[in-house]
Length: 465
Image (tube, rainbow, N blue to C red; front, side, top):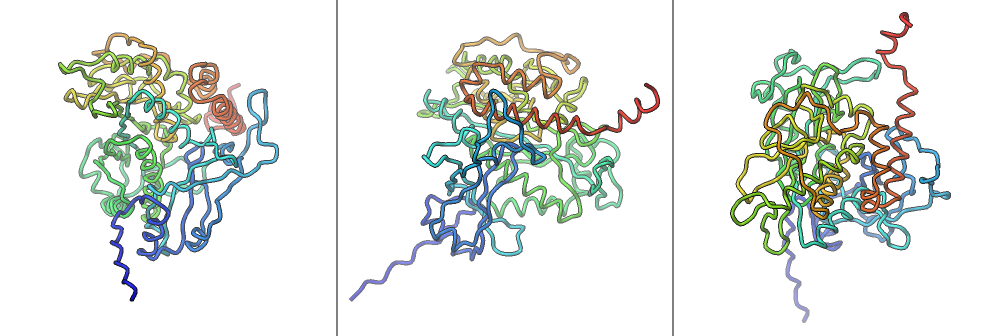
């Protein structure tokens, strides 16, 4: 007489499972009909395939052309040069699911799940130009030292009226009062309440995906918001930023608005950032290596800061990846224009927030909200790692207003890309293929930008020169 099988406990997790078998159970329990198999490209755009759940479990391996990691933001491809060459056959890359990222797509009408994948060659080698692999490569350096970095990103974005003609400037949307914002309302609760229904949707859709928001505030600009995430493992937090961006855009569309992560969407408003708080703990003890036993800052912490001062200029093209990004770096604003550092000083690029010794951390204020979260976090941690390994020493902390002092940061995309391509330490760390590919893509994006005539040129050059 056969024994009855014990019923398996239901998988309650809203986000992430341990294996293919658990994924099967998770999807069946929720009646999932389709799966979005996605991978973030170099711009942080979700690429991939939608497939029925049955097909996903029937065994086929997801493939996509290698060119998905050589596309510009406009969908073009850079020309070959002495350092960058396309795959001549545009052969397939192979993608493996990371089941810890499995979650629903709560804005879809049919029951749908999403699952982030990692990219490999046919031989099973991680693809050097895939952003998740870039971050993993940097994290492995920390792991080899017995360290575990922790990060907490902060994302700023704007809500704007729908804009279907790019020749027209963006405008703030109308809130529940029927009036658009005109003045700046930093930290205003009433300004936040103007968009209560939208904010409720952001919370609801985030909760359905197992995404945790620490705080949500109204920022300085008109209809500019900021979401702060809880600190955690860098790869997990990069995944969360990637998913949050999709979620916020979808929530805005439900309310006839756009959510934009452009670094500088409106000329008369502040730019949008993605500040990254960083600390490093001992992997065995969990102790913050930035603090000594007596509570003072450690040599590693000061070197971590110095590494940012030394190498941030060379990775600015990752922190500020588009021509528009550099419009954010303006004097006498809340955006950084230097790589100075200071204690609780928001006028420098590197701020050390007030904290207890066990929570000592560095806030990198240079990245803009348009940055790919995987690459920005990888680049920031790479700067700190190089500083620690080279035992660098920072300059003196700034105690006064430094918002008017331009220092070290590149002022434009081409200058930033050149610095990145010339830095041997970063080439060794990121790999020549990634550096060459990223450089080629950014140069091609600049050429695309130069093909467009701006209103400034028509305003001041048309009849005056």
